[in-house]
Length: 451
Image 1 (cartoon, rainbow, N blue to C red):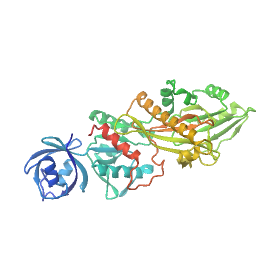
Image 2 (cartoon, one colour; image 1 turned 90 degrees about the vertical axis):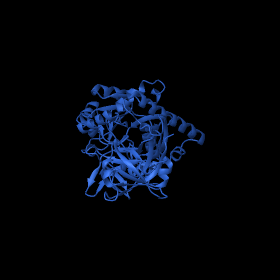
Image 3 (cartoon, rainbow, N blue to C red; image 1 turned 120 degrees about the vertical axis):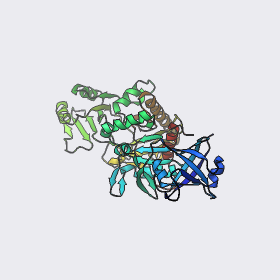
Image 4 (cartoon, rainbow, N blue to C red; image 1 turned 180 degrees about the vertical axis):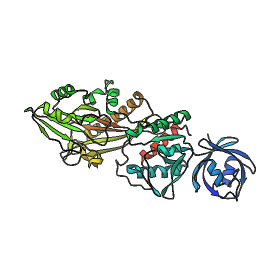
């Protein structure tokens, strides 16, 4: 078993300690049986420096070093809480180092992280407790060996070491297709650095992967690629309600709901389009002409299911599936999401409301039925996550599986999210770290092969 100890690194001026010297307190020297004057290789990420030890009498596990040494190791100048581990007789490491890649908006002396601000702070607090160096970076920042470390309640820009593992939280599909992202991805590949949820997966890719599985197909609404006018006409002939969803869409944007009326008319509803559209059409031709100019980004057509509703509002269930300290999928969070009034999607970004799963089911189902429904949905969510993981190239460690129930209580898959929202449980940062946040860090350690 690897010997390690949680320490504090305290920088001092170069005049007080030379670049090649570290002062170590008694808990450190005793733990590793180190003596004055020993020569060690000190590693952090891919940086290393040969140093000589000076043992000092202090009761707390503290390592004093020069600012020059911190610079050579690409570490920040301030006090740092981190793990000190023995690699072999003459080599020791600081870390591990975990990096989260995202979009960072720099505003003078502060940064904005959008909807994942509190989540990132939560990860940083948890990592500090574990002695892990955690930082945020962006695509350009990474090229410059820069990142943001959470110190004294705020994010501080610093040089940072190359990480042992990266968690991808880039929110823009366009940015993931950029040349800068390709360079980033190639660099990680060349260095052998694992990174997970390394790319978005689209709705058609998910359907193709799952529909091949005979035991899963009953839980999938019929789905077709919208290749031409005929495909839409055929789907409307088969199903009284269909949904048109952008293949690469997210957050319930640019979705159409078409209701095929018995009298041959068509009723259209939609989300987030700049220009208003007619809601009623007297022929398929007029409907298609209205839709045609808005379907250029690639769409799927999906069978509409008569869904179970709560207070006459559609709802679905978000299952957050994660790998923790191995390759097994587990559910770390479940919430029910009820749509806003007069809306047909439940996304929180569109005014959806979070509810407890038992609360929304209790209006129509007995407690025994609720238990069976929850068990089936749990099993289905984990099975879907596992199959996506094995069927689609890339490393996935976290997936948001959205399920809905029909009026009989049968579950149906609505969507799979590779970058699930971090505001699904209305969490506020506190001393308690969510299981889902712990799972992210523990899986990072697993991927980095860190004991």
